[in-house]
Every structure is written in structure tokens, then in C-alpha cells.
Image (tube, rainbow, N blue to C red):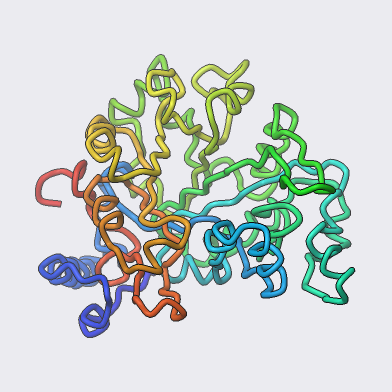
Length: 383
């Protein structure tokens, strides 16, 4: 069962919503008495009627200090934006994250076992950690942030990452559904001598589906076919109550390819409305496409009204509460507040725990460390 924090812990959080905490505590108490799951949400709610927190680049480990200096010597701004990391996927899920993000790199040649940055430092007599060379030398879809410099991951392959999520899911079968974002990499580092990166095209997308189904049985996945149902298009299904209820979705995962339409287009070719596919696609720049169901809208201030409209229409939206370490360094909560108020079902952060180096206490959590709550825009009255 998903843990619900005590009221005393609520008061210690930097992110306090006052009356909302009491509401959540009452809901949790009622859940315990009624036998409902510990998130306190009614099983009749549909998954587009809830709100949860997720993590950005969830696999990313800290860059070694020597590597960070190498990066900063070329671009101090780039170094600042890369200066964050995450604990294991299981720890993030334990802490209430219900969305994780993976950055796959198509690697049929096993080309990422000898990072340029590590070679450059070795020439200076400096050794830095590198990923398991034996694993990286094998063909397959790898998971990393920036090849050659920001390559350290808590799971090195897509199958490994998904296996870790499934292991956690198997131990928590009543969990709120987990959205797994797939953010494919297409371009190499711009430094001379960088490792080439192959575009994540049709062959890679087909391999992605195969890897997903290698780890998760189809019935453990909320698929586009399920949401479309008897409707002509996925878009119609999403806006006509096609999302499953929590009763049907607990213990399951769903996938979205976070990429531009021209990149995910091959995934939909031959699969109208993503028929037969396991992942949804980011429709932010293709809102009228028959495949539109999930929108990745990363600017909750600029796109606030549009995001609210899309949530109210029945779509699922993911947004970001912080970016590039800015909010954590300054303590500015404006973006975080807008992200939650937008109704985005998944609010993503690099700071599910605060970074003590910055001294701001900035973190992104639902009140009471809840895994999910009623959506402020799309939930029915009385939720």
C-alpha cells in the first residue's frame, strides 16, 4: 500500500498547502476505514482525473566533479543545467513519484562504452567513473542523458530500467498507474570527436515496443487501443471518457513518446490512432491529430490557460515544475504553483527531494507526500 505521511511530517515540508493537507489527512483516514487504497482516491475516478508528481531524467546519476569542470570550462551555463541527479528508480517510486522519464539511445553497434569526456580526462591523468563497458559494448537501446559527458545512469539499458520499474510495481500492485516517458535521443555532443548518435527512427521505435513487451505483459500496460475503445480515433476516445478508472489501472503502467510529430510519425505509420502500439505520443504540436491523447507541455506559466483547457477536454498533460536547476537555486516557487494549478496530471521535477547544496529547501511534492490527489481541474465535484 502507498504510504501516507503523518500530519507532523506535513508541517515540516517546505511545500505546505494549508487546508489541503487537512483534507488529504481526512481522506487518508477514510480510506483506511473503507478499505480503499492508501492514496485515498475512489476507484471510480478515471486516470485523467487525478494529479501526481514525477521525475525528470529519472535515471540520471551525478556527474563526477572532474567531468563537471571539463564541461564548465567550455560552458558554465551548460554545467549548471546538468548539475542534478536522482536516487534509484525504486526510491523515487517509494517517495511517491508516479511518472518517470527515460532517455533511450538507439545503439545497434554498442558504441557508447568509451566516452569522449573520460578519454579527455584520462589524457590529463584523471580517472572518472564510466558505465559498465561490457554492458555498453553490447547492441541494444541504452539509457543516458548526454553521450560522452553526462552518461552515468542508474540503469544502462531500456530493458534494465523497465525491469526495475516492474520489480517495484510487482511489490506494490495497488499503486496509482505509472506514466513512463520515453524521450529519444537523436543528436551527438557538439564537441569534436564525439560519439555518433543514430536517429531514433522506425527500427528503433519497433525495438522499443519489443523491449517494453519483453518486460511488461500487455495487460499490465494502459494502451492506446484501450483508450480509443470503439471510437474512430484515439483523440475521440480520450475526450469521451475512454481513460480507464483507477480500479482498472492500478498496478499498471503507460508509456508516452516525448518527441516532435515528425519524429514519432513513423511510429504511427501503419498504425492509425496508434492501433496495436503500446505507447502514446506527445501531441503538444499536433493537437488535432487522431493520435492526440497526451500532451507534454513544459511551460506551465506561458501555456497555463491552454493546459487547463486540454485537461478539461479530457486529455492527459505532463508539465515541469522546475528546469535547469533554476528554481532549486533561487527557491522561486512560481512555476511549481502554476504547474499544479494547471491541472496537469503529471507534474515533473528534478527535486522530489531538496538539494542541500542550495539551501532553499525547494522540493516538489503533493501535500502529505501523497502519490496522487484529485485533479484540481478535471476531477468531479466532491472528489
